[in-house]
Image (cartoon, rainbow, N blue to C red):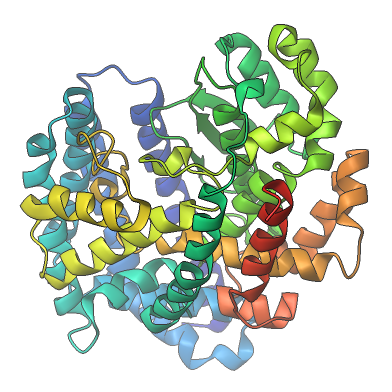
Amino acid sequence: MKLEQARLDFDNLQRKISAFNHATALIYYDGETTAPSDTAANRTHSLQILNEEIFKLKTGEETEELLNYLNERRDDLTVRERRAVDFMLKDFNRKKPIPPKEYVNYENLLTLAQDAWHTATEEDDFSILAPHLKKVFDKQREFAKVCRPEMDPYKYWLELYEEGVDVETCDKLFADIRNELTPLLHQIMEKPQVDDSSIKGNFSVEKQEGLALYLLDLIGLNMNRVGLATSEHPFTTYLGSHYDERIATRYSKKDFTFSMYTVLHEGGHVLYDMGQADNLAYTVLDGTQSMSLLESQGRFYENIVGRSLPFIEYIYPELEELFPETISRHTPEEIYRAVNKVEPGLIRMDADELTLNLHIIVRYELEKDMIAGTLDVKDLPEAWAAKYKDYLGLDVPNHVHGVLQDIHWPFGATGYFPSYALGNVMGSQMTEKMNEEINLEECIKEGNYALINLWNKEKVWKHGGLYNAREIMEKQVGVKLSSEPYIRYLRKKYSEIYNL
């Protein structure tokens, strides 16, 4: 084998994987958005075949030989090629110890678990999901022990989403956040509550969709490459490459801001994806190796930008035109205060910016215990309720408002939840550095997202999977991971809103 041929073979291998991923992503997107209720078996059939082919491409003998050949000649490769080889070798070593049939069976298990979650949620019956969820966690624990017997099983799964960020780092950051912000929450709860009537009413779905499209255009998305649909659980996915993106949101007729901030959050994800360098397209580096970086962009556009007073003032005329009966009776200042109301609640996706972290910490602690085997799935609802009572002072009335509200665990995304809180931390650090170079507030006031997006693209987006989160923060942004900027941001903002 000659090096140039090996490089071509490697490029073709990545393009094949990208094509198969495109197909599986389309099937997933269809299942979560428009697929009829009784089509799960059909999707499972197709996904089983596709996932088996993906597994073969990533772990076959030819792939192993190619990766080892290139790795031995890494000094002759470009930076991008070396990183792609490292990424695929890491993935190869994660999957190789797993028999192909076991891997495909696991993917099928996840498909069935997701469908069980939908049914369980509709019927508010955790027992429908429980046996599927137990199999998921049992299999994840088994895979971790087989693939990395020397590693803590939860760290194995966390590393899948957060290369370079370990459990010890998460434990410290989350403890700091909890210890610093819990007293702030108590102070706020002792103050007169914010009036949020300015965002409550009866809002048509059609006009909310119009608002969603307006917002996505405002922050700079190319809507010729972005689809918008609805789903029970909002999400973003890219299809084959960063050239083709899909957003799914959910509309609440009682509160237009639910979809408004969902769309801003998912729009931040899409900006990140689409801002990646075009030479990464159809490679394994087309996408982040860190979900916290992805979440940092979602939280930035949702909260730091979208919940700021300058943003509300800028979009106020659009809101007034779409929802005149409600908006015309209120000022931008009143709407700003309403969208920043702090009120402990049961649903993570409805959580305010301050209490969201407690929702994340609950899930982080529970999934660690389930992977460790110290918490049985059948006892999960009780453990969930106990933590919500302890952390948020709330009683959980049913499963829909408790353990059934997220699809992450049936989806197999154990280790993903920390990314939300880590993204909050990183987003605040990036904002402080951004303000050293551009006036963020003035840009928002003027609706000028070109400068904002350019900064994010140069520092974060364009690198895709070339670097992990820690490397991006230290080498590109110029900071070490710390919760202090995030805590400063929240203290300043909410002290002003609640006159603390």
